[in-house]
Amino acid sequence: MLLFRKSFSIHYLISFLLRIVMVYMMVRFHSYVFSITLFAYLFLGLYAILIQSIIAALLYFSFIVFFAFFIAYFCCTKCQSTYVSCLHKFPGILARLFRMRTKKRFTKSELYIIYITTSIIILIPQIWLWEIKIVFVLFWICVLFNVFENRILFLSYVEK
Image 1 (spheres, rainbow, N blue to C red):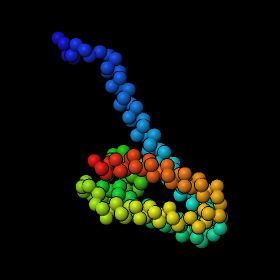
Image 2: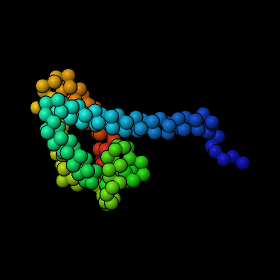
Image 3: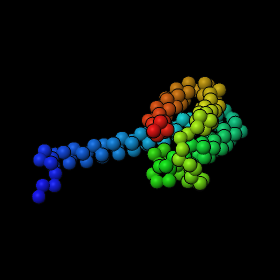
Image 4: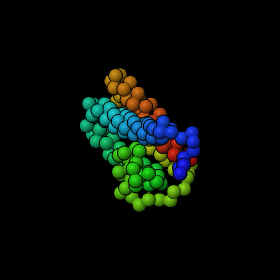
């Protein structure tokens, strides 16, 4: 009994399985790059502020914690992969603290909330970063990598 087409061979099966593995590895690679660059630019901003003012660093850290929960609620609780296997890693862990919201598309106001809170987190340390040029450059390299990776992971999901 012939189970497959005549043109089917083990070569096609191996090729198909390798493509699945490659896609999985690329998604995981992007999620790790996103997480590493996110924590890197948050740490660099906090470091630049901490060198010059402990009180300002504590305030910035409190903003980071507050906005992390804020973004996790508005963004991650709508994502279906948050409760299974979050690609963004840490924000997905925070989102599990909240109840899952409807799986409708993100509204423009929700996207604006995410963009504004992220912009605030990025813009606050600029005054202190400017004093330390190398940290300033590293910060923006991490931000740009993070934005690029987020475009691949998050916005590709939003556009579906």
